[in-house]
Image (cartoon, rainbow, N blue to C red):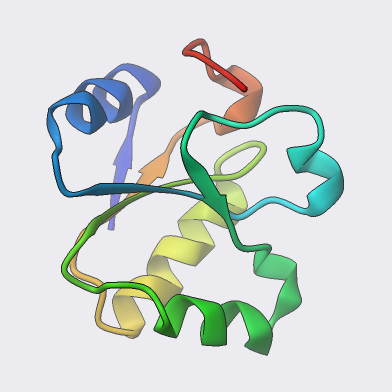
Length: 102
C-alpha cells in the first residue's frame, strides 16, 4: 500500500491506463458527491466488503479513498492481504479532494 498526497494520487491516476477508483465510504457519504468513475464498496459492510473485493480484478491498480483517508488506508491493507499488489490510499480523502466531482 502507498499513501499518496492529493497531487500524487491524481497525477498517477491520470497516467494509469489500468486504474480503478474505489470509494469505500457509506451510501450517505456517497450522496455528498464522488470522484468520477468510482465504484463504491462500503468498508463498514465487513465480510460483505471482503466478498465484494474478491470479485475485483487483482491485476488492476486501485486508487482508494474515503472521507478522510483513514478507512481507505484500512481498505488498502485488507486488499494487500487478499493479494492486491497495487492499492493507493488518497491522503486526506474526499474532504480534501480538489479535483473533479460528480
